[in-house]
Length: 93
Length: 431
Image (cartoon, rainbow over all chains, first blue to last red; front, side):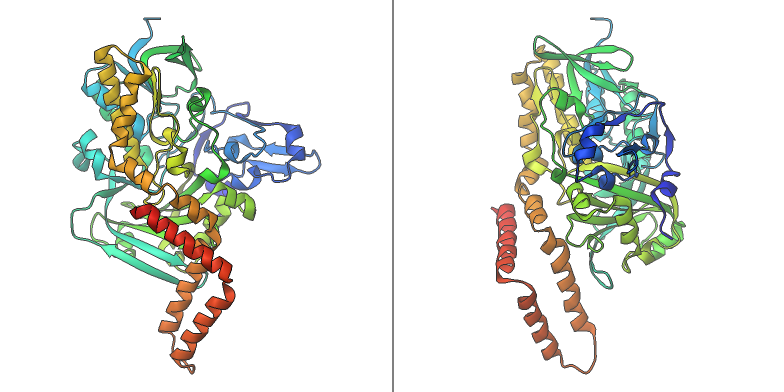
């Protein structure tokens, strides 16, 4: 059976920080038709919440690859590395 | 300012950073290697294989002592369709120059060798800013403190926020980067050797074009490790957005294609991982040096996508930047004219010349991804179907139909475009 992203992510050691290191600009996202972040992320970090009309950011799933930063056509994503001592640790890589 | 000052600060302990660190440590220079992860390699992944050159120059004992998984004896290429596949394989008994490794182990081993020779290693250290004084780079700022050096080498990877901060690198576009996603699947040693037809410690590299990334600029790969296999895909970011599909969905589809499914069968998922791959090629190489600073490895976009080469160019660029830094320290001159020697050295390497050779290849393939990754893989499979199938229809009619369909399906304009692209790529490579 094909595994979901969440199932796969359970194999990656991660120590999430309390605050998100990924901060999208809410207004820009509302006007964005493309929403590349929903598709390029290998970890399913971004989901569009229709009720709130904004992105849900599961930053604790982030693999720190930077795909969303590059794909965001409006450059509306504040993207930085997690603080020292936080984030993912691959044991194989 | 003198308290925290060394000769060289290197940001990032990947293949490029550690290569620079060990080269400087060998020359008895004071060098600090900074890494944001818990240990070198802890945030890194690739396919993947490392190569004999320049590894052997930097780490002469690597064949005996490094955590190598397998020595690659065979290279397979699969043209993948939904229900069939065509494969070509090259196997050689000549000494191999490529080895599979797992980066969390390999990168750590390399950084440890630099430390052994006197480099100072600081893990869990995220650099936020490059510090400048009078227009010259003089140090870096971490989450905790400032460090100063005569030369800063940026080996901070494909995203290189620091090169961007310095204005040395432009923003890369989504068409200039691919996402690599991979699963390491546990399999018994004997099963791997049987399944891939390998001897003890021998490895096989498989590159796959076509399904499920038909019409998308992307490739699949399988590498064999000691007791696991690394299975993954690399696909351009713009293709994912255009096709509204995620890398993980594509990877799952890839594993289900009939050519791949039996190779990955019963593999137990040990780890999922992802990393960006620079795809911009020669034209995306940023400014490589400035007063007090040099850029190496992925941060400098030094990846040859056509031949799956990256870590070798990374190591070599790190080594050349370090050798330039040594000359600069000895001459007490850290100006950009001094550090321009790094670019000169790099330009003389075969890697750099290769990047130049393929400067248009990836872009041309990308512009024609529908035909290169979709239509032609399909037609090649169809051709072999005719060759191998038996039935009531004479072969002559099948061949005629094949050619007729080819002309019918392919408008003259697109056929012409394909031929022009093919010629353009060929001429670009051999001229």
